[in-house]
Length: 86
Image (tube, rainbow, N blue to C red; front, side, top):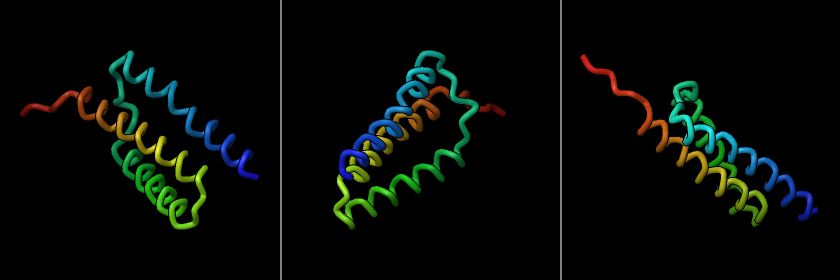
């Protein structure tokens, strides 16, 4: 069963790579909302905490790597989103 968990972790975490690369190349993250990033980030954090509490390594690894990918996306959004001037 651990093999299935690790495979699932690799697939669901790896799906972030194309989005990160696209966002970096285009410098465009306007279509990704802050609410989405906050909600997903909170869920990922809670899944990682759950994985730690239950000792489930695939859940911990997948959500730690996904959390890092989300932080990279947050950094890109903060950097690439034009500031409004008044």
